Length: 365
Image (tube, rainbow, N blue to C red):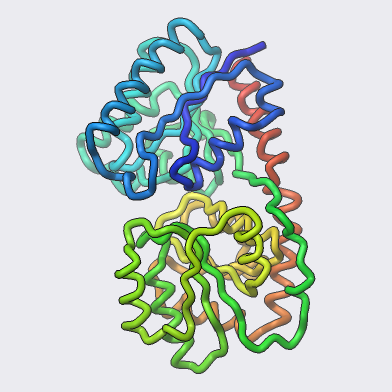
C-alpha cells in the first residue's frame, strides 16, 4: 500500500483549511487507500494567534521541522501532501518546510486553500521564493478560477482540481423555510468576525436597508477575530442598528444547524476568500446566498441561480442584492432549492474524498 505524509492544517483554530484537514484525517476512504501519517502545519492554536509571533509558536515550528525530517528519513512516504500558505504572512514559514521536503527527495503536491501569489509576485524576494517553491511540484486547486493566481509559476498540466466538500450538518431538512407570507426576513452571517470577511461592509449595507424601511433582522454567528466585541458593538451603535442586528456568539452542532434553519438568506461578503465552506453549509439548508466574486466562490454560488454575487467591499451593491432577496419570496425559495441540489450533486464530503483519492493515486503512479 502506498504511503502518504500529510502536512496540513487541522483545528484548532477553526477555519476552512483546518476543517478540510480534519475531514482528510478522519476519512475512512483515504485511510483504507493509503498508509498515512499526519503533521500539523499550523503553529497557531486560536484565531487571535494567527499572524502573531512568540516563543510558543517558534517551538511548534522547530518541532514540525524535526518531525518532517524524521518522517522523510524513516517513514519514507511515496508522496508528501502539503497545504501551505502562499500569502506573505505564511509563505516564509511554509517555504522552509517545502525546502526541507524537496531536499530530502520524493514527490510533493500542494493543495492550496488560500491565494495571493498574483498580488505579490512583483516583489523581488517573493518572486524568488515563489519560483523555488512551485518548481517541480504538482498543485491542487479548489477551482479553475484560481489558476490565474499561480499561472506565472505553474504550468496548467501540473494543476489538478478538487473542489471542497463537507459533511451533511445535523437536521438540515427544514420545512419552515417553505412557509409563505413571512414578514420579517432573517439574514444570517456565520464566520469568525474578521475584517476580511466583510463584517463592516455588511453593517454598512444593513444601514441602507434600514433607511429604506425594509423589515429584516441580521444575526451574526461566530467568534471574535481581529474585530473585538467593543469594535463590533460600536459599529452597530454608530449605524443605529441595535434593533436590527443580533450577535449570537459561536455556535456548533445542533445550535449552528438551528441558526441556518431559522434564516431566510445567507450573506457572506468576504473580501479575500478562496472557496468559502460556509456557503456550502448554507446550501444544505436551502438558503439563497449573497456573497462576493472572490476566488472560487463564483464556481460555488452560481450567479442568478443559487444566489447573487457582488464585488467585494461594495456596500451599495451588497445592500441592493440583499434588498432584492428580502422583497422577493419566490426568488428566495427558487434559489435556495437550486443551491441544495447543487450541494448534493457536487459538494458532499463523499464526492470530495473520492476526487482527492483519485488525484493522489494518479500522482503516485
